[in-house]
Length: 445
Ligand code: ADP
Ligand code: MG
Image 1 (cartoon, helix red, strand yellow):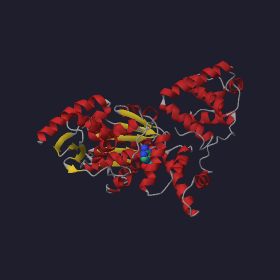
Image 2 (cartoon, helix red, strand yellow; image 1 turned 135 degrees about the vertical axis):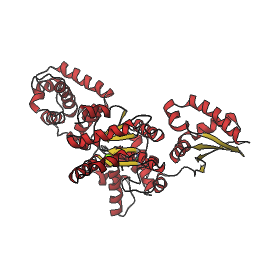
Image 3 (cartoon, protein in one colour; image 1 turned 90 degrees about the vertical axis):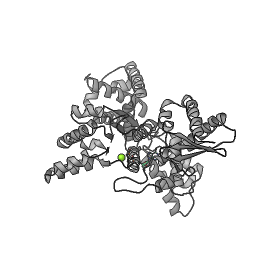
Image 4 (cartoon, protein in one colour; image 1 turned 45 degrees about the vertical axis):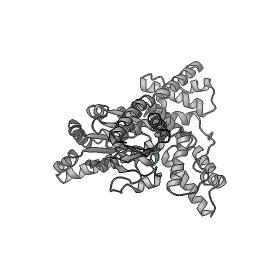
């Protein structure tokens, strides 16, 4: 058949697919595809890059085939081709990272292909992919925040690799590097060169921006860089350990950080943890039985980095014992780092102190009568956590926290739970406090 026909068939198929998948899914994965050829039951679809090819091939193949079958013949085979170049079958996470040349400031392993999607990170992943497709157009800046070890740098570098492969002048630095470069430029009277270096970026990736918090001159310089790039529609992507609203920077910069899209990454749920370990075992060609992988995934690591550390420990431990990994060796290897049994050493005092600490308040503020918004919130969180983490009765919790009665404690706990359902920052804050109360014992999900 003619190429024109393939094009037409695919347009019809897209009409179907647009109804079947979510609109963000369609925008991200299907929008820039075309029907290339249809010959000998082989239907070739042109896609803009390898990761779209890989995604469609791994996740949407059967839907695409089903849709095309209805428009063509029942034994159609679908092939994805990157801008006309032929795409191999689905590659493993390992070969994906080998395919990307390492560079001074991008980790070669941090590519989209090796990033495991889960509920905890899918918004951030979609947004990152969107930015790659439409730099400077979808959301500017894209602001990704979340706890340490949850994949922020991985996503940022993945954007960097893609930008680089598209010949975009990409600049990727950490908040710390930015600060150091700025300080040196000031010292050597080279602020003009510094400014030009950043002004010429087609896309600017800044990792751990929170590092510049409290450094006024650096923050000011970043503010100007931001404005220059933003004014000329150059994409800016920022990661941070906290949302813009909690960044210790001047209002004018803070409000700009909120101009685009703000997404967070959360600790992964069990399925995602398993998928991450599975991918890691494949990539590193470690034979790890499924039950051992589950055993590790079920432990309570607070981040993906710690989860990977747990995996490495099990591998190292088994090698030491010259045995292959088993549940028993895994249990031994992990006994000190990730117990499943919550500790019971927490006392109301220790919990209240930790909560006060995290809210930057004093222990006595929580026990006393202060009623401003921040203190009231911290006190509710303290009630919630004393109730959960110690064996105290409601009445005793109330007594310990400013002489409230049991029903006030119940209400406070309910309020915290409902706030947590909508406020991911609060969720993480509480998770972090629990982590400090019982290291390793809080479920990562
Ligand atoms: P952060 O910058 O948020 O502190 P990183 O991006 O450095 O975290 O991630 C820590 C480690 O966890 C890295 O080795 C990274 O590859 C891995 N990782 C995090 N999230 C994922 C994911 N969704 N899929 C695969 N690996 C992940
Ligand atoms: Mg990081």
